[in-house]
Image (cartoon, rainbow, N blue to C red; front, side, top):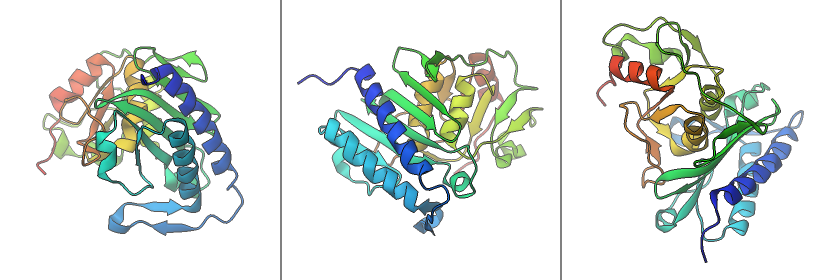
Length: 265
């Protein structure tokens, strides 16, 4: 049986993301136990785990032949042999979610052959849904979005933690940028996609589930998306991490690559 078209997978992801949002919002004002994951991997809440279970059951029931990779599910080698795989972050920006802030998201993607073919980033507390299928452009709440075409890095709106502007990453000098920040990495990618920011950088290893959906959305909006050294991202690898992320319009992306240096190790 042929695999569904990316548009069909995108519709499936969008419906599942809406259901995830309803669950997560339902935890507002309710007890939501929090624990720290081993290895300094951050907090996880009952809401994260409930959303994860729902998504796994719903998505794999609809696509039983697909693999599964999620931040909150135990990983295994079975996904590596699947033609397509779901790559999911049940709640991206859990710290913001715990704090009662609004800038957290559900990040859902389908990858095939190492590249993402459908992706959704849903921000239920903000009433925003970003979506893209490979080759079909990117949309926010159904309206097309486009990345910034800014020509230079100095003065750009750059989404990054403060540590990404450490001088060791910028041998030619730290650029004069307006630094912005959102806890959800997926949301940061979408803010580049819709032109609200000119670029996003992270020089540290990043998990596939944080970037898969947002990276497709940003690239379909016209941004260039690479790892921290300017190489294309690949997905569904045995170790599901990527070596940093650089996202910007073509000119700003070239400027970042030419001016940055990733610390050894």
